[in-house]
Amino acid sequence: EHVLCLKQQSTYDKLLAEVPKYKMITISILCDRLRVTCSLARKGIAILLAKGLIKPLVLHSSQHIYTSVAEKEA
Image 1 (tube, helix red, strand yellow):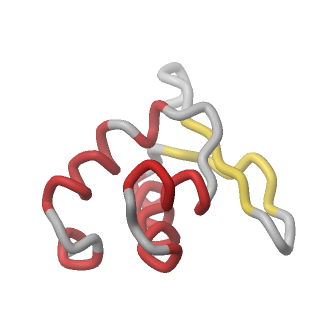
Image 2 (image 1 turned 135 degrees about the horizontal axis):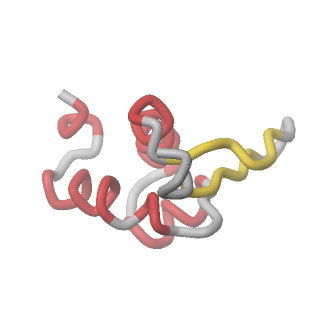
Image 3 (image 1 turned 45 degrees about the vertical axis):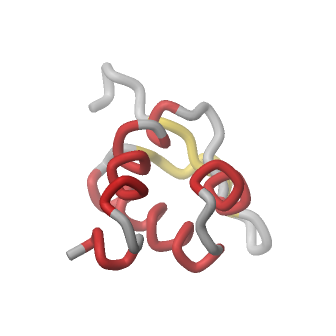
């Protein structure tokens, strides 16, 4: 069902495989690296948060920054 949000299976697979390894994750970084729109990047971040693959680092009103969950914490 989440694959439909991200249009292509390859984009969804890349989201789950590569993005949690990034040290810093923002909407703009996902837009640039996955070649998706901002709204799809927000949905992708929501999916990763729900799965527990990333965690919030800074939640400011104008910019949310996330980071990977360390192996020990997972």
